[in-house]
Length: 260
Ligand SMILES: Nc1nc2c(ncn2[C@@H]2O[C@H](COP(=O)(O)OP(=O)(O)OP(=O)(O)O)[C@@H](O)[C@H]2O)c(=O)[nH]1
Ligand SMILES: [Mg+2]
Image (tube, rainbow, N blue to C red; front, side, top):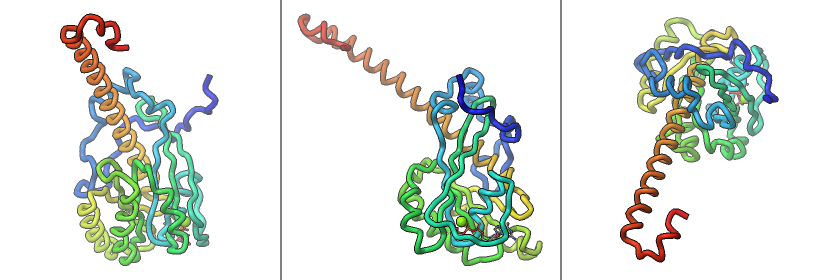
């Protein structure tokens, strides 16, 4: 019997969500990969959908809007007053992707220098790293490289998915925005991150952004699971094979110990 309530209807992901800008996207294809789709249909997603919870960390300068971004998505709330995050905070979000339950743990970290050493102890084990900057403050974009460097010290650069998200879109004029987007797309390409621009005040882009984070993290988790179970199967074959060859090579009295 499941103790968890069903996943909210507005957290059900059936279609692969689109990227924000094709030129700075982690994936440009329109749908989930065939092997992931088939694994979901055949319920072969292993720990994904059962116990696995994927960790996502949100980093970036102080007051760029990390807490507001998470609160807009998780609570559909916005607070115009700034309250610095002290250390870290987290929210759980449950999704259903192609019929498979999938949970994200969203870690909101402090941008203030004095809380950074506490916050950075929570960076480890992230499947996705969201680096936030303020679209009206170019220095916050410049600092994203440093934030990424710090986050990657605690994570595997080969497997963590990176997102560069510009916040407070409502505050920039179209002209300012276009200039900033050009710079941000370039930074995202250098980092191999996916670029997004959102407004937590209006909600513009927030849901699409987190759906994309969830879908890409889900897909990467299922692929990793398939790879693990595939290599487990190969290891079993190798074990059986080496045991059977031992049967020929090993003197008779040792044969009974084989494969025990
Ligand atoms: N207009 C506008 N203001 C925003 C937006 N997002 C955040 N803010 C404001 O920016 C300020 C800082 O937001 P926070 O979310 O607390 O910033 P933070 O990045 O979590 O800051 P730290 O916890 O110190 O690292 C607050 O006053 C928010 O109301 C947005 O999309 N639009
Ligand atoms: Mg905060």
